[in-house]
Length: 406
Image (tube, rainbow, N blue to C red):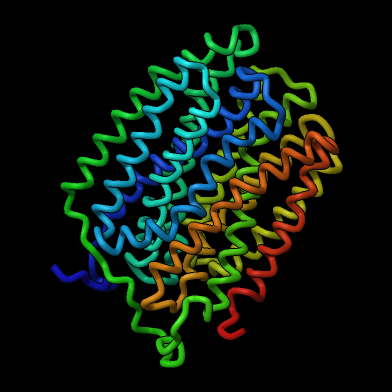
């Protein structure tokens, strides 16, 4: 069956609900990292850099596997590729069981790497799929819907795993603590396998990534690197994902470092997620009805810069609150960046999507740098790293996304 290009009159509610379910999976698994970072730090007595290897192992797979994922999707199509991605994730989650039994941190990292590979396939397929299914000017609104699903799942993961893993974690041995992971990850594996089967036999349509609104001079380009809006978008996405992971995944350890207890700090990532959720809901209402994708990106970057300064200049819970509110500030960035970066790529849309997915490696590398600054300078001053990241995102929002030639 020949893939069809979407039109404004087609109804894509069913496919978008399926994609929304996948974004729920993304959120649940990804935001678990914040709990795992704090949990493994205590269970294995790790340094901040050592515990942040959780984020590194998870997100570095996006760099290594994005291009192979694009090639896979060309062979399998979106639907079958998503099913394969879920099965790879299931392999990664089941690895947690033997890792807990033999008390092996490297084996846990291997499982996280496999989960990241599966997510790379899913992200490479689902983000452009969401962008294509409907008018481009409302793409950020559709991705915001997906973001709501993603963040609700993240909040749920914090409630379940934060209470399960961090309550009393510093009062038992590492081996005993790790046993808490076995049953939840067996259940999670089963859920992923069932989802893979359901999507494999669903009626999701294949759609074409071709766009017929591109000027002739753009359709005649021979390389994806000839699109500055994409290349600068990859860098901006690298900055964004690194900043999001730092804001969400390090806040528990930051709270512990400045004197909060486990029972208090375990809630902090939820505050970041509440901010993200509120921002996505606002985006659904406001974009593009009251504010454009470009303006939302600009406002989000400015607010993020202001909150970062606030986190650096305040102490105690006020500083924690500024870090958590970054979730609200950055909420428009991911939804707005995708349609702007993929705009008018035509036949290069799939490879462009894969390259954007590679930008997610910011979540692997930048938290390690933040961890180093935490250990070498101070937990608070490590957040100065966010200033140049949000600065570049602001540049992309104001200038970079408009560039059509180098």
